[in-house]
Image (cartoon, rainbow, N blue to C red; front, side):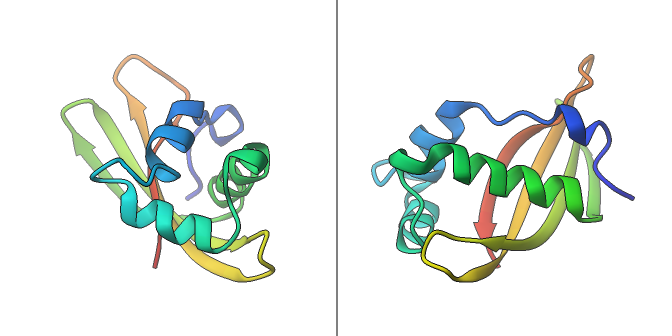
Length: 110
């Protein structure tokens, strides 16, 4: 199965800047080091966002998990990076209770 309502998936700018690319966020630092190493940064946020959304749009959901806020969906896929590398990334999306649009929770290299 594919991510439900994937055409409406959202990624908050803060999720990219303050988490996935933040070298000072305790939880995001290792992710930021990796994503920056492969060429993503504040100057190409739209490219980063498009690459993450493409994983949700083009790949099957591997895992579905109910949790306190709704349902989490895990999708994995290959991402083209600014450095020219093609890397395998796991994305975690949530469709919160009462909402329809999936939102990005996290992403990391696998």
